[in-house]
Length: 240
Figure 1 (cartoon, one colour):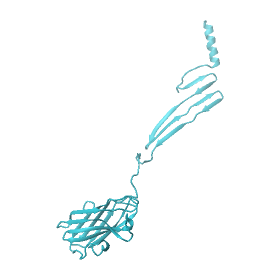
Figure 2 (cartoon, one colour):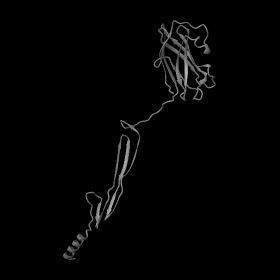
Figure 3 (cartoon, rainbow, N blue to C red):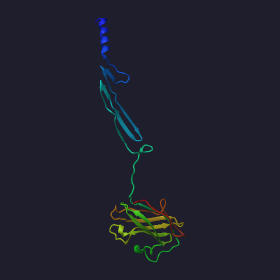
Figure 4 (tube, rainbow, N blue to C red):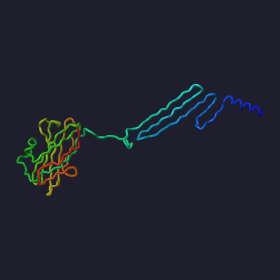
């Protein structure tokens, strides 16, 4: 082919505008009188425990006709708080009482009542009484009377009594003893030994329901000194 022929072909190609190439954007191709522009990208990231992915769409133009595909994205994640950690809540109410703690003093100067202990005559056959409300697994409240009776110097018995209306097989208005035990004190009035038994069967709830009575440290603190009967605090861990 002569140099004249080569030159003629080059001029013809330039006049028709046919060329191919890859520009700086790496995805641009031109041909004829139109061009096709395509660009795809994927973005991903996370912020405060939320992950996000997305695809930037593509656009195509050819002559007078064009089409554009937008951006699609999806986001997944979980609720977060300040630091970005996932938060969750466990437990809550209602919650059955499992533990009772008493801080009190029993008057060491007292003598035992003349009548033997009687659940139906608790006030007359006890030296000292206090009360606490406990809750069963449904959140129902049960009022307990904690009754203390001195048997000898440094030796006490205790009884927990509630109304039978809230108990399986019980009768409203009839007191029922659900727990009892003994307390022994050293010469300085500090608690040295204790026993306890419990049979708490709330009606229409999980039963038997265990109850632990804490009369000694660290949760409780019952003493036996030559001072009037008194209660500093009585607490329990259930809620309605």
